[in-house]
Image 1 (spheres, rainbow, N blue to C red):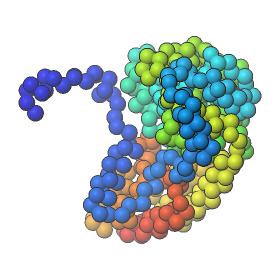
Image 2 (tube, rainbow, N blue to C red):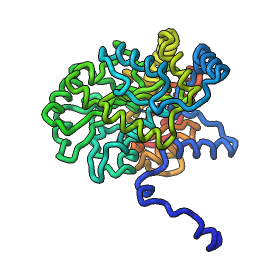
Image 3 (tube, rainbow, N blue to C red):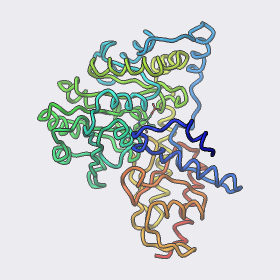
Length: 409
Ligand SMILES: Cc1ncc(COP(=O)(O)O)c(C=O)c1O
């Protein structure tokens, strides 16, 4: 690179040193490199439904295009979408949200990011229970906040307890992030557990809760999944609910998410939205209306299929000596304790000492790709997706069994 070219390059802001590439993208690069070398891989890394978007949703999008619904909309969406979201929120939480208490984003991910942009001042703390969705800590740090990672245990179902929450709160705490059902563990907070956390929050009025409920429709227990706002309606102003159509309706590429909470927060997010992307795609908004208003047939059918796959993967992993899978209550991932394999020796003489080495051993010996626990702030474990066909799951389980059998322990 010439000096002239260097001088023309924009100098990146200091904040860029606080954000790293998502681990899933890194794994995807590794998989592509493997495939380019002609090797077959079995990616258990998939973070999106393998189903196609339902036809009635696609039809609604096509009709919107034909009807000329291809212009900017208000930052918080078309009246039809706002109505559909408000009815969905009412069905789920029993709460009536006004249009000014909701906001729209290009996916739930963007809304979480914007919520932190809107609220975090330098040094503000955000409590993030681990294992956590990979993006939360980076979203906090890039916006000047400090993620306070609070460990959970298998015995506690990988859920934040009132005691641990109380201990983690300081004068600088702005948010606690609750993700239910959880990615990566599949944990779902029950009503009693949410009540316990709400009791702690009542004593700390400066703390708000960001409830990421993006997997709430993919759940294997009682429905709907309990929400913080349902068990503690008095805290409604301090609960920011985040959801979207990506996972429930197999619409990850359409990029529609929504949030509900205090009017001041939703208004601030709307302002940020209007100054950054103006609004999410008008065509995707029409599709989201069809999804949210379109009945439960798709969700019921896919949850039945996910249930079979979950059982297949959990049973298969459970039979491999050294792996301890957790039965997920929601989402489409199986969180597996692989700590018993640490210290084992691979055929090439590597003594497994890190998650990266374990993942590399799986990849090299059976082509199976998993996302390891360190990405979720919880080493010694891995996440395996079951958003895959049953045949692929069977093949991957056989592959993992083979890889583990090669280890000297
Ligand atoms: C826990 C969690 N929250 C939010 C998202 C983002 O969802 P969206 O596609 O609506 O941005 C994901 C996607 O993987 C997720 O796992």
